[in-house]
Length: 403
Image (cartoon, helix red, strand yellow):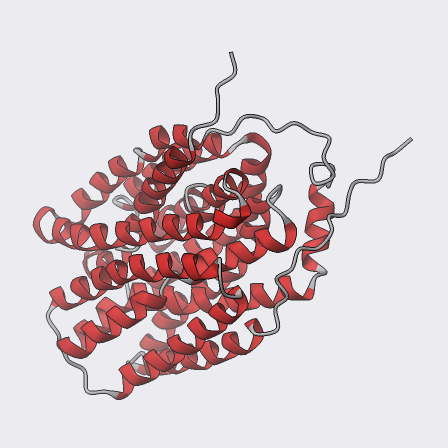
């Protein structure tokens, strides 16, 4: 007997828990930089390259895993992703060489994240919730991911300090496996064919998207989001340590970013149902540029770090429900996971450059000043290019029947 689809409440709760685990675990990776580079005698570029590769692989695989989720269901993709996530975390403990670390933390975790994060769960949310509630539902799921960051960042820092970084990674691997049973709440019955939207092929959907100017502008803006948040998330602990602030400051800062992002993403989802999403995106990117500029120009203290973290937290992942909401609004929900994954690839190219250039330019110049300045300029750029995005739905290119 075929299973019935879970209730909307169940879908939302399980989506939130999955994103909380998946995103929460990865947001604490920056705390592993000092102990792992010291234990394996690496410079920061080795660690930064692996995490940059992780983001690049994550983005490259996202459209493919999204396509699989659209076609075969999110649950199967999530189970495989959970197994790969646990394996990657466990193998990090044995990756003594830069190449091995790039394989475990970079390639394996990159693929795992592509199957356990926003694009996959947003496909289910987009197809399950009516358009009038879709933006709010996506905002709630993103807020849950932020709450996961708030909980997991200090937890990972505590485990590293009291249990050692090896045991911390093994515990995180066991936690990642919880994604598999939670995936049952995202079960989708097979969709009946016959509608115009269902008759559009994967190739037609891709061609339609990449030839639409607003999709390309949205994609370019998402590049900036990835650059900024991953550079800050990975390198902020080392930046603050270099400036002589206590190690706990970085833990509190990243946790505060996660806590404030709960509010930021929730509010963004609510506003996205009432205000044009393109205007909200432009405002968010411009506000990030201003916040970063003020932060690096002020005398550094624990107070300034907390103010920066709280303000940046409100803007942190608020782009996620808005960007995915625009994609769903323009192209519909049939291939939402795949098209969101395509946009996300640009985000992850930015993530790779943000984390990698952070390590490279630090090793070359002895500071992060240049990367902070690049982040400001990119924020202004993203604010400009999101402004002309057109959000209205366009007709689906239906498949042409063959004789």
